[in-house]
Image 1 (tube, rainbow, N blue to C red):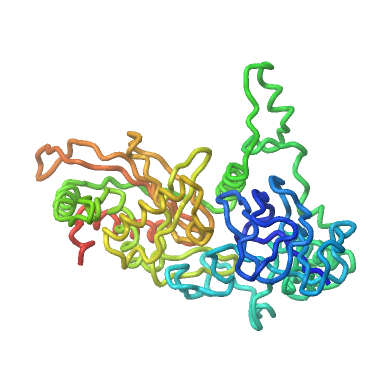
Image 2: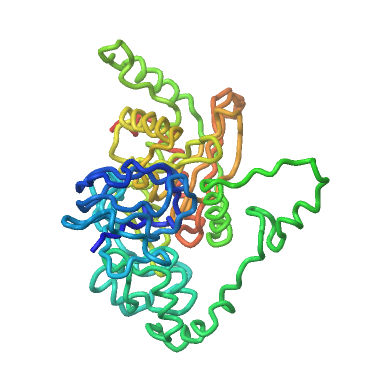
Length: 467
């Protein structure tokens, strides 16, 4: 009986991937742990390891194939004693009676694990703001263990009013996939209750399909043809969207529609910080090549200050999670890194506990691998807040869009000489403008003001970051 190899889900939000390259060919022996393929997601290229042994009998999806759905059959492995040449590609893309061999992204932790340095632990806060109430009885899956399901399956289940915990999964290790939920809806089983059952009869009425060929980022209701109709033919070039740009357009559009943003702006004086930075950089030791062990930037101080501010205002160190708030024990600070065609936001874990030099060196490593698209999904997923610094471009002030599921993002402008009044007389200081975007579901105005005030205090009295 051949073993199925399916397109893996390399991140919680992945629905499709590009099969960039096969590293094994038909007839090659495969051992557990062998890297067999490279998969491109919207963010990175990942090596995929086999977890079963055998011979690669059939490659069903050629390298270079784009938009391969998660859990689609991509290859067949012959077990010991089977003739690889006698194994045929299944009709309709399914292998009847075949076993399924999960494949693992190299270097990615198990879904249920929380390795050191990955996502920090959190406490559930069952009283949500604005009078919202949790669902009451614990979901069967939550009480007895996590339900493994694809993002698409969860979305279809929500739209169709189906209790996903009651759906039998046909994916790897019993994972619930889209076709399982569709079958439950059509069969009238696994309904979550009377009200959702009505939605199951006509899910299209609850979630109408978008207009065909709608241009990403275009005003709602405008099709591609309508947008093009505004402009003279030949005046523009059509640039197809890659996976990263599609994801950015989708997620940040959803963020502005779902998360109620409000903005808080402060001016931070930098004179003390710049003096401390100069002193610390001058004290850096040298490596064996004679290069400094670290070179602190203003952004390193900003990351550290934001991490400490979150732990000093613990109610703000939280994210929204449907019917509750997740409040974290340590600060997870993402940092926007611009690359060609988009951006990554690698996350500094436990930023409140790390030294400035550790943050500086970690960010240099992240930035280099981000530009090469070599970051692992666990390195840019999660986080409670982010820092977006456009000061190097001379931008004085801007507002940033929150990156879900985070609850805040700090927009940092350029440092510049300004005239202020001190002790009743004009004085020249170096200052920068910072604007905090807040998700009003998690933070109200007073809490957001407390957070950005704590940040400002640390920036203007930076010795507090060293103790």
